[in-house]
Image (cartoon, rainbow, N blue to C red; front, side):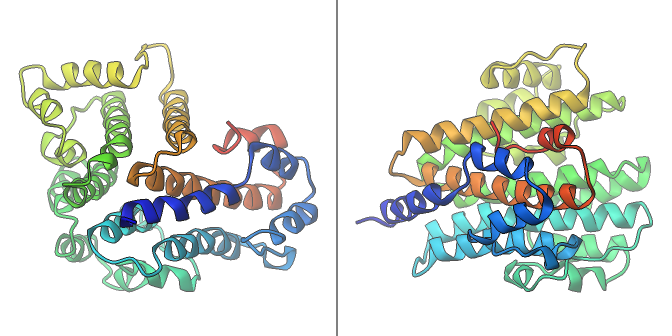
Length: 325
């Protein structure tokens, strides 16, 4: 049995343990204590006494990290490197994004009190101790986030922190494109994700009267040669946006707000992952799709716990969840 097939078989076990939309609906309608009891009977092991910001985050994402480690137990080589970078890299980017945005808005950064984040390649807590944006960007540049240096230069000129976020994502996908060379099925997952993020950043920057920085965005589409050629062509961004929208099957109307469009795109990606997971193909695309859905579930569990604790209305809270499709 190949490593790819072995991982796919393990991923089927994980897929069977993910919560259904009915489960989330039940949790939404429950009191905080009843909801915690529901989760306590699962892998999340949550109790009412633990429901504060750090504990809720830690319990949700520790479960996700443990699931990744369980899936990869005994696996070595390129396939493990790709799966780790895809799954754990998401949490790393989330935490680095929060750190960089805290620095650019002069907010104190406090990483989650959670032992599980020691499993990540880069420690946000240790990184925060470097203090300055320049020092942190320099360190990250030495650890795979090459485009952050360019983004920092542009940030210093225009003071738009979204450029730092874009560079983080671009480097994340660039690394995945490199690791997935020779693993063809990974493209089924990475291509749609990367194109969707490309559209996201193009529209966000347009709303702010800016163009898509080609040097920063190139990592998103590193293995998509036609997209790269289009990006660098005359009127490249406009042509790329139309090409991306056609590939995703979405309409880019002027009458939709960016917030609504973002929600639409987030749900499009989740539906795409569900479609891959439901096909149950025995390859790496299935593994990555299931891990993506497990990541989405962890985020929804966290938002549910936090929202219930803050007494957010059920209808408002439901709109923040992606597992209820």
